[in-house]
Image (tube, rainbow, N blue to C red; front, side):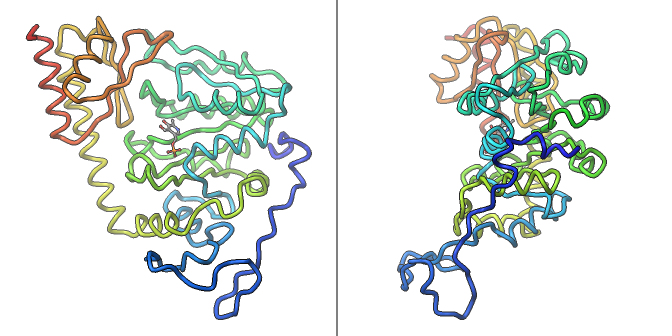
Length: 355
Ligand SMILES: Cc1ncc(COP(=O)(O)O)c(C=O)c1O
């Protein structure tokens, strides 16, 4: 069975919105557009015209970049939109559920709440470096579990899910649920993307974003990749013209080879800075734990989280704290070398007990 059959029955046969035809070198009086282009228009495709209903050339470029056939890929407004589309497509309000590990990215639970789907969580433990327990995830599932979200590397812990654990989950859950692997931070891990498992595992969906390693958070662009029939359903429910002309052109430029080469160099710098920051941070007496990280951030436990946050804030540096099982834990995003130096100076002053 295809996991597309787990989607809401009324959406499986929904057709995408039928957009007005767009044919070059024609007089276009079929879409109620303005006939003139504004003087503020600096784009290759004029802004008085609607963008393509789905950005075809961008999808091909992203497919080439991520190693996936474009027919298996939907371009979305960040992976945030992909998460929303997936939960709306698969979960019936009041009936179906999603499963996540905890702690993890809060957007999965948020969109489950928006859709009225239940959210089941499986705890991962700080003393086990937040390792995923596949048996526990499978035990948390029932017949109504439509989606299992696996965030790897995980936000906010930085934990990478080992390939073998993921294969185990994919194989043992089979076509009873879709397994959604969110790889927002995979470029910082040095590990290959699980996109290469798509052929072998028809219950796998993969999320990738341009917001992190490619430095395009402001453009709002990501992808969901998976079986063609699932992509077709997501395509039918996504808003028409979701990706605007400025975004499409900016991301096309970002995917040109020179921009990608530049990003590769920067990723290596961030990884080196992460290792430097983690080593320096672990030497401070007020830092109790520094967890391993495969992302562009890392998580630490300190003796007094509020004091550290306040001290950083007073010096113009924002860090992120969490509640629940992550009391006194702080997530530190790796910045530029100068930003990291500034953070280390502030933390060292604190460590020496200087006011
Ligand atoms: C794990 C994870 N997934 C997805 C996102 C959302 O990314 P996007 O900017 O692509 O919507 C984030 C953002 O912080 C994230 O941490």
